Image 1 (cartoon, rainbow, N blue to C red):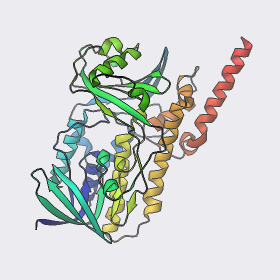
Image 2 (image 1 turned 90 degrees about the horizontal axis):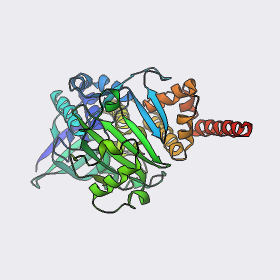
Image 3 (image 1 turned 135 degrees about the horizontal axis):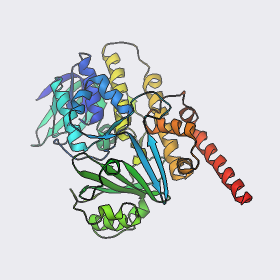
Image 4 (image 1 turned 30 degrees about the horizontal axis):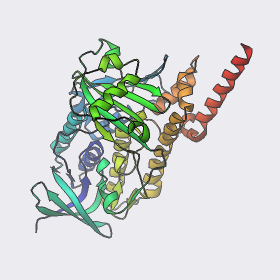
Length: 416
């Protein structure tokens, strides 16, 4: 019987798993990663937020990323008809990083994995977790390699950073429906041969083509650009034909980008993800902890995926390190509470985006610079800064601001 023994088993070699494993290795804890895919591999989520730069820096992965020449992201642009709203990360309420990157995830994740391996963390690629059993906090994980061979990994703790694979939620029956509306997405990467020069050609943009339907445009430094539509599932499914035909027809909804992307060659056939928002019954149990998308995935509108993954991956690793070392921990207080708070903040912003309240705030003129700074901090990923009233009062401040804007518009109409 092929059996290994480790202190911590990390499932998944994406950003969350690499951050978790790097932190543990830095703290002299015996850790290994198992990853179902062969790297490099494509995955969605190419726009980062400044907050995740703190995580890469803390665990020693940042310098390797800086050498790759990824497209720098200093903010984001939102379009709606003839209205434009630009956010500059250097003009935000919370102190922190003022920039990040737009990254081809296949390359980016591979760099992270290679750097994690250089630290001495073994990664078993093309190894699928097919079963897990627990004896208290100790676990026995059954893993199958690409040739069908089985092996067993005994661990004192498991960190599930499997993302969309959601390994432990599936095996332990933890999955539950998301409270968010059912939305889907269709997307690809194009060879951006019509890209304008200068800032226009490199700027990440969200083009609102209908109230609840928007197009993302994420340019990369290699001359390709990620494009994709997000909207209610019934809207995405209302288009017929092949994925390429459906995406090409949807591009006609964008008066701003239609001519730039019309007929461009795709790097891959457009992919469709149906009803992408997910949730779980619990994010930890005896012997395991869930991070990132393996626990909760909200909506791609604010590019929170990777940042939430690295935030929770780092925090989970800190909790597990304390547990392995026999130090007192309170996972409800130290892990569940902050993770849930971050989910709640992002959820409020997602809900108010689709209710149009947040869109009213974005596009209202004249701009309120103080409000914009506070919202910008959230869009930069600093959703745990409770000194920001747009974080602390997230569940009501956006609706209140939108109501004030409605009253102002109503008054102006009466005066006309």
